[in-house]
Amino acid sequence: MHNKIFAALTSRSGLGAVLMFAVAAVTFIQVSGLRLGTADAMGPGYFPALLGGLFLLFGLMLLIEGWQNPDQRVAPGLLRPVIYLLGAIILFGVFYPLLGGAISIAVLVTVSALAETGRTLREIALLVVTVVGLIWGIFVFALDLQLRMMPPWVLP
Image 1 (cartoon, one colour):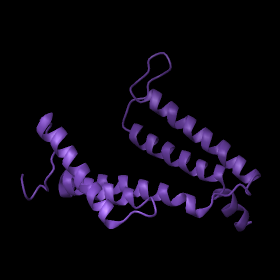
Image 2 (cartoon, helix red, strand yellow; image 1 turned 180 degrees about the horizontal axis):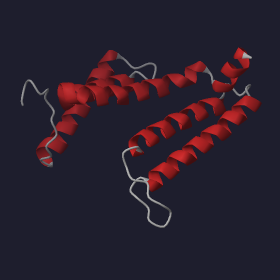
Image 3 (cartoon, helix red, strand yellow; image 1 turned 30 degrees about the horizontal axis):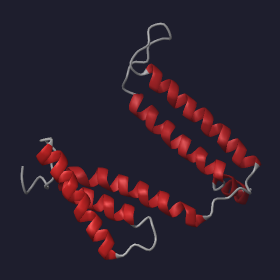
């Protein structure tokens, strides 16, 4: 029984179901403080809650499909880029308030570049310097946006 559940969750449909459940959970958490209203007097949370319900429904449909066809497995090597890219985005979100844009973007670019095998450290370093420089030049200097590039303890 345990192997069938694991096989269903690691199938293509099962992984899609897990993703749909995660998106539904985030949607419901975000909408929890909003007024839902009714169908004829919709509140600001009505449509997002409806979308969250659809994500949940699609997740259930994918989970059933994964349970019925557990043999459509995803090779672990194919998950590497997805894991690295999601990790890069999460790290950026965590590091930006603490370390500022320059370091957070450097981490984002470095981890994203590691998603592709065969990159050298020199290529990654050049990519980091180029992207951080372009973002700093375009958004901070050219467009004069108030993007905090330095850590808060360096320049408040």
